[in-house]
Picture (cartoon, rainbow, N blue to C red):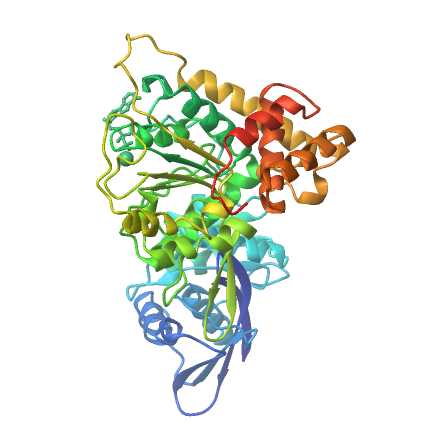
Length: 504
Ligand SMILES: Nc1ncnc2c1ncn2[C@@H]1O[C@H](COP(=O)(O)OP(=O)(O)O)[C@@H](O)[C@H]1O
Ligand SMILES: [Mg+2]
């Protein structure tokens, strides 16, 4: 007899529905899985067989053929186990599902342990979203992933601990209660977040950080060791404006696929702030691996990626940031296909001005040779420098301060949130994501200011890319000032902090 069940596979960070078809026929007893199954899927044979037996069911002594459709989609992972086991039970008359649609309208997702218990798989949110998108009205998932699945919304979600529970639910004997979608809660600020109130001096540094975070522009701090670069950049974590609901779902889905332990709350409000160490591997930074996992650039999606000691990162790692910085996504080439993962983040960079760190600091002597200094700086050129919006040299602060706090993170974050809302209401995106053809009257660039921008671009010899970047920053400065129209003074401030590279 024939039966089919609904499951899903992960491709990148998205789910794709998979139909698990099972045929139980006379013939030599055995189980065959077809349909581009990866090794973990092929091993499902043994898991499903043992789980069925240890849950009190029979493994039919027939020829069992399992087809995973669509057949041209490579399938990885162990999440199809539950759908396979259930379809085998239907096809061998051991389960008679209640309801008109049988089991076809319910997504069955989860790995089976040999004793019949259900184990969570990565990416349950994306898997359940895919099932919802193809019309499923319910999903049964491992209990430990049920809250995550319920966060998808718009589909009934049941959590189960064992195969037996799932089968009794489908047979109408012991229905499992559906879960309520989780509510978004306010998250406390993590202890390691620097309050900008603890930064002494650095008025320009603070101001540019506020601008960068408000419009999600890319910002670099340079300066000698100990000047406070790391301190200031880390303060950004406490300034990022809250995620809206759609963004929160995106962030949760990526974390779910990554399967990281520090997953944070479901549907978070706090934007991601990722600060990988400079020794990180290329794969951990941009993602990849035998089973593609999102890297730091994707975990920073909708938030900030802080590369402390930027120039110590491997050259190929810095180069790999070019794609995400341009397109907001990262492409990973596989043998069989090219995957694209979301990676739209604001970049925070911090580096010393030269290998010894003291070049350009008054009262100190740089001991680097010219060549070494040039080579050091060359690492910043190209991929990163062209994509920075603001660069701020930090100078040593003259005094340790008088104990008075200029302004704490709460006040600054409040202004940033207002400026971020202005952007969302006006154009639906952060200013950093404004395409060049939208820098016009609709976004507050009237004819006069556009002519002014052109004139300055010519006078300063700026590239088109640089002009657009400065214009976006000016838009953010205007938003922080509560201005609908961008004015000359906003352009002045934006251009004052542009990266200087002699190639403009
Ligand atoms: N402007 C400042 N205000 C308060 N603390 C500072 C400041 N500059 C440096 N510090 C302190 O000095 C130490 C080194 O600062 P850090 O940010 O790590 O410097 P950098 O990254 O530039 O080498 C930190 O403990 C930091 O708290
Ligand atoms: Mg530092």
